[in-house]
Image (cartoon, rainbow, N blue to C red):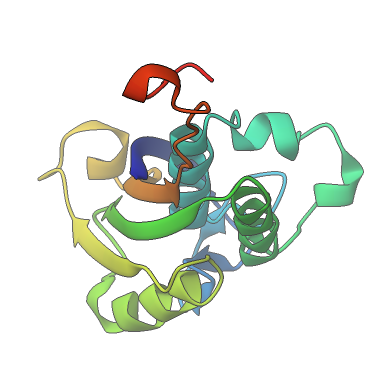
Length: 176
């Protein structure tokens, strides 16, 4: 019997000068980068939280705390590989990931396919990965072009073994 779980992730970072803008592992030419301990890749962070949450394995702050200098400026796709390894160790396969990047600028469309490929290549199960982008029509911090947010959902699965007793009396023991 196949067991399925869904997870949801969210991340947001403000713009800052002097850093590259990285989303889904893609370096995007832009006047600002995102402030954060790692490379501040909000898309990859939201995906990781969705995967960890679906598997019941906590969140990225637990696994990669911002107080640990080992993760200072780290490439978030490297962290995604570690998350993928945790899922695999626990028998999980990623079925699909659906993510939305929320920002007024820069334009995301030219980079979505590369982001999708980067994420898909680092998670178990050859999942379908969908990356979308939207604006908030000038509302909120993303609408004022103060930063970028990302939302992701994931579906993961694993084969769970149905254990049976010695079948005494012809009945299955579901609690064995």
